[in-house]
Amino acid sequence: MTTLTHSGSAVQRTAHLYDRVRHIVPEVEWPFFAEDAEAILRLKEEHNAVVLAHNYQTPEIFHCVSDIVGDSLALAREAQHVEADVIVLAGVHFMAETAKLLNPAKTVLIPDPLAGCSLAESITAADVRSLRAAHPGVPVVTYVNTSAAVKAESDICCTSGNAVKVIESLGVDRVIMIPDEFLARNIAAQTGVEVITWPGRCEVHERFTADDIRSVRADHPGAVVLAHPECPPEVVGEADMSGSTAQMLDFVVTRRPRQVALITECSMSDNIAAQHPEVEFVRPCNLCPHMKRNSLAKIRRSLETMTHEVTIDDAVADRARAAVDRMLAV
Image 1 (cartoon, rainbow, N blue to C red):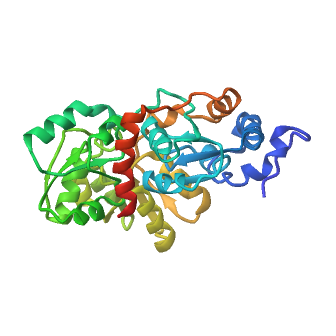
Image 2 (cartoon, helix red, strand yellow):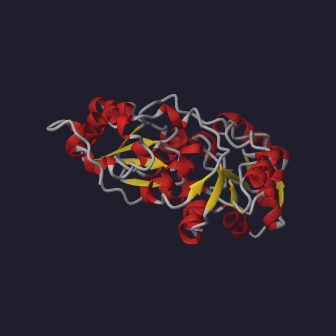
Image 3 (cartoon, helix red, strand yellow):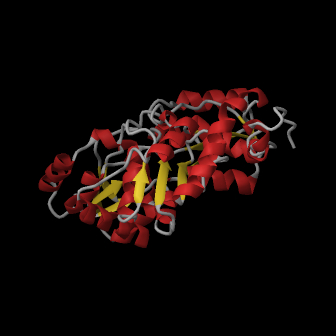
């Protein structure tokens, strides 16, 4: 247990929260988080609200104020069962839209409406219609990292964690998979299904190189390397395993490697390290500027003001929801 001082203060009252992240967050930094964390817990109770947080959120959000955490697939699945009146999505905009699709009667808030995604911004609904016209009859499998408007033009959605299962469930030998080019190529290599790609890329994962992996192995012999499938195929080829953030977490928790490199966003390793200090995490990693737009202060402000509310046009929502529901049924 930590021994925070500041008797009678928010720092002392939230010491139990700090204990969850003390291996990652220096004690000197906690006073800057304590009041916001305490306020968020109170506001959640007042508004019957829950906070859903993606694995790329910083530890003080992920471990201290969130009710449901996970990768995109886990958040989508759990969002179906939320009983609260208000959902605050600590992630990026397409995740908040997905939560709204699955909870149309609930209020869904995003702390920073500018928290976007390079993949979601790489493709439009008109682009999907053009792809369909160029490849008639070929099913469109759409990564959840897209807008509701793009999902509405799709046959089925997928995540990095279930893409293989989704594609194989279609029973076809050719699909259009959008928008992540690298994910599509990596999945094609696993399925043997011909994949028509779109040139979208994640600005976090596209920057990793095969040389990065070789450097990790040279500097840390014996380290296990896990790469996200949004990485270039040559990076995935150098890794010991490729998988979604949930699959990475499961690998670390069950295998307990002495040293591991997670080739993904930096907060992923921080959040696992907070609960598993016995595992040494080695770099590289890259920061997502969109995920990092979220903060405890913004989550608090979101609950205080009930902003920024996510809305989706009904005509779009019904079709987009159908694509997400088909994914969840696989």
